[in-house]
Image 1 (cartoon, rainbow, N blue to C red):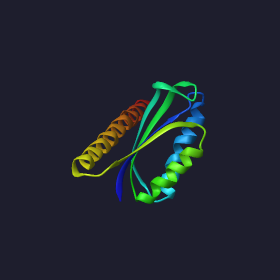
Image 2 (image 1 turned 60 degrees about the vertical axis):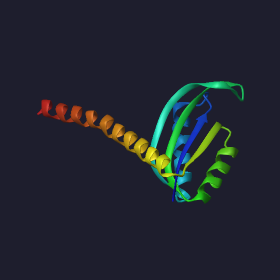
Image 3 (image 1 turned 180 degrees about the horizontal axis):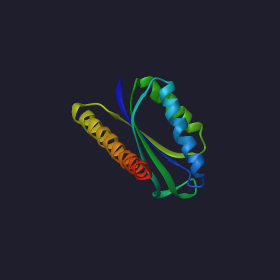
Length: 132
Protein backbone atom coordinates (compact mmCIF):
# COMPACT_ATOMS: atom_id res chain seq x y z
CA UNK A 1 0.00 0.00 0.00
CA UNK A 2 1.28 3.42 -0.94
CA UNK A 3 0.57 6.77 0.67
CA UNK A 4 -1.40 9.41 -1.24
CA UNK A 5 -3.00 12.80 -0.89
CA UNK A 6 -5.89 13.78 -3.18
CA UNK A 7 -6.92 17.42 -3.43
CA UNK A 8 -9.95 18.31 -5.50
CA UNK A 9 -11.86 21.53 -6.16
CA UNK A 10 -15.62 21.57 -6.65
CA UNK A 11 -17.65 24.21 -8.47
CA UNK A 12 -18.67 27.09 -6.19
CA UNK A 13 -22.22 27.01 -7.59
CA UNK A 14 -23.06 23.75 -5.79
CA UNK A 15 -25.31 23.73 -2.72
CA UNK A 16 -24.10 22.42 0.65
CA UNK A 17 -25.97 19.14 0.09
CA UNK A 18 -24.45 18.69 -3.37
CA UNK A 19 -20.96 19.42 -2.02
CA UNK A 20 -21.40 16.88 0.78
CA UNK A 21 -22.73 14.31 -1.70
CA UNK A 22 -19.74 14.76 -4.06
CA UNK A 23 -17.20 14.60 -1.23
CA UNK A 24 -18.85 11.42 0.10
CA UNK A 25 -18.99 9.98 -3.43
CA UNK A 26 -15.21 10.40 -3.86
CA UNK A 27 -14.66 8.69 -0.51
CA UNK A 28 -16.93 5.80 -1.56
CA UNK A 29 -15.03 5.36 -4.84
CA UNK A 30 -11.73 5.26 -2.95
CA UNK A 31 -12.97 2.71 -0.41
CA UNK A 32 -14.73 0.56 -3.01
CA UNK A 33 -11.45 0.21 -4.91
CA UNK A 34 -9.44 -0.87 -1.87
CA UNK A 35 -8.15 2.41 -0.46
CA UNK A 36 -8.04 3.11 3.28
CA UNK A 37 -8.98 6.73 3.92
CA UNK A 38 -6.94 8.00 6.87
CA UNK A 39 -8.12 11.61 7.10
CA UNK A 40 -10.15 14.30 5.37
CA UNK A 41 -9.39 18.01 5.37
CA UNK A 42 -12.15 20.39 4.33
CA UNK A 43 -10.75 23.77 3.37
CA UNK A 44 -14.05 25.28 2.21
CA UNK A 45 -14.55 27.90 -0.46
CA UNK A 46 -11.36 29.65 -1.53
CA UNK A 47 -10.25 31.93 -4.32
CA UNK A 48 -8.48 30.13 -7.15
CA UNK A 49 -5.06 31.32 -8.30
CA UNK A 50 -6.45 31.72 -11.82
CA UNK A 51 -9.79 31.34 -13.55
CA UNK A 52 -10.76 27.70 -14.14
CA UNK A 53 -13.77 26.98 -16.38
CA UNK A 54 -14.91 30.61 -15.81
CA UNK A 55 -14.87 30.15 -12.01
CA UNK A 56 -12.78 32.35 -9.72
CA UNK A 57 -13.57 30.40 -6.54
CA UNK A 58 -13.86 26.73 -5.63
CA UNK A 59 -14.65 24.42 -2.74
CA UNK A 60 -11.47 22.58 -1.65
CA UNK A 61 -11.29 19.13 -0.04
CA UNK A 62 -8.25 16.93 0.66
CA UNK A 63 -8.21 13.18 1.35
CA UNK A 64 -5.19 11.38 2.83
CA UNK A 65 -5.31 7.66 2.04
CA UNK A 66 -3.35 4.45 1.54
CA UNK A 67 -4.02 2.44 -1.59
CA UNK A 68 -2.55 0.15 -4.22
CA UNK A 69 -1.32 1.96 -7.33
CA UNK A 70 -4.25 0.66 -9.41
CA UNK A 71 -6.72 2.76 -7.40
CA UNK A 72 -5.22 6.02 -8.66
CA UNK A 73 -6.11 5.32 -12.29
CA UNK A 74 -9.72 4.56 -11.33
CA UNK A 75 -10.20 7.60 -9.06
CA UNK A 76 -8.70 9.92 -11.65
CA UNK A 77 -10.96 8.44 -14.33
CA UNK A 78 -14.02 9.07 -12.14
CA UNK A 79 -12.89 12.63 -11.36
CA UNK A 80 -12.27 13.45 -15.04
CA UNK A 81 -15.81 12.46 -16.06
CA UNK A 82 -17.36 14.34 -13.14
CA UNK A 83 -18.34 17.85 -14.27
CA UNK A 84 -18.65 19.26 -10.75
CA UNK A 85 -14.93 18.78 -10.06
CA UNK A 86 -13.03 21.55 -11.81
CA UNK A 87 -9.47 20.71 -10.66
CA UNK A 88 -7.69 17.89 -8.85
CA UNK A 89 -4.20 16.86 -7.79
CA UNK A 90 -2.94 13.48 -6.59
CA UNK A 91 0.34 13.38 -4.68
CA UNK A 92 2.24 10.16 -3.94
CA UNK A 93 4.47 10.06 -0.88
CA UNK A 94 7.47 7.78 -1.53
CA UNK A 95 10.52 8.21 0.66
CA UNK A 96 10.72 8.00 4.46
CA UNK A 97 10.68 11.76 4.98
CA UNK A 98 7.55 12.20 2.86
CA UNK A 99 5.78 9.28 4.56
CA UNK A 100 6.66 10.73 7.97
CA UNK A 101 5.13 14.05 6.87
CA UNK A 102 2.00 12.19 5.65
CA UNK A 103 1.65 10.37 8.98
CA UNK A 104 2.18 13.59 10.94
CA UNK A 105 -0.48 15.38 8.88
CA UNK A 106 -2.97 12.54 9.36
CA UNK A 107 -2.32 12.41 13.10
CA UNK A 108 -2.80 16.17 13.38
CA UNK A 109 -6.08 16.10 11.42
CA UNK A 110 -7.42 13.15 13.42
CA UNK A 111 -6.53 14.74 16.77
CA UNK A 112 -8.13 17.99 15.65
CA UNK A 113 -11.32 16.11 14.70
CA UNK A 114 -11.41 14.41 18.12
CA UNK A 115 -10.91 17.74 19.92
CA UNK A 116 -13.74 19.34 17.94
CA UNK A 117 -16.07 16.45 18.80
CA UNK A 118 -15.29 16.47 22.54
CA UNK A 119 -16.75 19.91 23.44
CA UNK A 120 -20.09 18.83 21.99
CA UNK A 121 -20.24 15.78 24.24
CA UNK A 122 -19.20 17.88 27.28
CA UNK A 123 -21.96 20.41 26.54
CA UNK A 124 -24.52 17.63 26.18
CA UNK A 125 -23.53 16.03 29.49
CA UNK A 126 -23.76 19.44 31.22
CA UNK A 127 -27.25 19.96 29.82
CA UNK A 128 -28.45 16.56 31.00
CA UNK A 129 -27.00 17.12 34.49
CA UNK A 130 -28.71 20.52 34.69
CA UNK A 131 -32.06 18.99 33.72
CA UNK A 132 -31.80 16.35 36.44
